[in-house]
Structures are given as structure tokens and as C-alpha cells.
Length: 162
Figure (cartoon, rainbow, N blue to C red):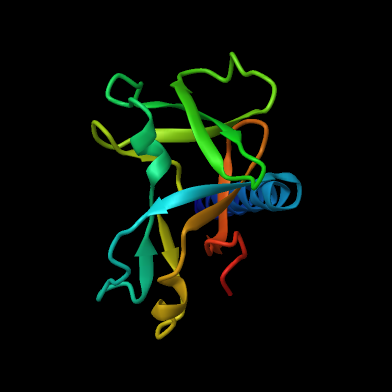
């Protein structure tokens, strides 16, 4: 009986490690091959006593689209201008239709008007809040399936803040 327990524990441990490894590999692919998209930020208080310094991100692109009738899960369709700044086109439930020059970003809807793309917080080293107060854009990389990864905050000249 004891050997069965050990095998079950080992199998579960291997499954967990495999899942996390797969997730890391997916994120690395997005970092390497994803398309950089800049999303304009709406200001929110950058402080949390429990979690340290961070900036809660709210993207103004959600304000430019009618999201009240949008499904709870779906895709935000954006088009980029010449500076790679996203402009909202529409929200849709499926990956199609998608026209030339349009990109998908997965979203979930937490309430009537708030679209979450999975990059709603940006943590930074304590004492560096002033550096990030000038942030105007959140930089995300997206793959062709709409998966996104926040890579940093950008200033109004579209330069990453370090």
C-alpha cells in the first residue's frame, strides 16, 4: 500500500512540474516571437501596503469600445498605428473574423465595463514609484492566438521605463 502512495505522489509531482514547464515555455515563446503592442494607460494609484510598490493598470482602450454587451470571455480586436499604439476596433467572442492589420488580445470581463487582459498589475522595486509615475503605455507582447504578456511600462516617447 505504501508503494502505491509513493507512486501516486511521484506521478502528481511530475504532472505539476510538466504543467509549469509547459506554461513557462509558452510565455518564453510569446516573449521571443510575440508582437509588441502599446496600450494607453488610465491613471490609478500606484501603492499597496500589503504587496509593496506596484501600479494597478487600467487601459483606456476599454473606454473607447462599447463593452456592456460583450461576452464574459472573448477577444479584444485592435489595430496599431505607426507607433505600435493599439486602437480598439471591436470585441468578439471568437478568433474570427480578423482583417489584415488587426490583432487579438484575450480578455475576461470582471464587471459591466472592465475588460481584463491578464496584465492589470505591474510590480516594481520599493522606492522606484517616481520612475513609473510617468508611464503612459503598458507594453504587451501577443501571439497569434491572443495570449498576451506584459513586458513593461513605456513613457510618452514610447521608450521602456527601466
